[in-house]
Length: 137
Image (cartoon, rainbow, N blue to C red; front, side, top):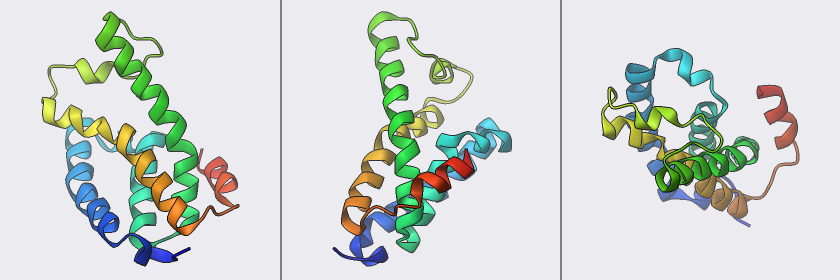
């Protein structure tokens, strides 16, 4: 098993580029308070974890982002198929006052869990992850 950021050199740069685009856009469009959502915290800590090659940060955010990503995806899919929200919380995706490109940045709910699970498989799960995520939540 490879350790640290060496295990995924390309993914760490993708994470950095994503953060440079996503973070200022989210702050401008949704405001600073939006960054208190657990899924947004997962983006920030997940990208930091990828950059540093931190098994603890990657594992802790994989724990939370997987469930959030599944519910988000189901709700988006349900809305596309039925015209109604199943769970709720994704209504902002249909807010036409916000540019479509900014709303589409929320697709991290799909890609982030996959990237973190892949990175975690490369460097291993840190057993302290659940405790850290509980402290964050």
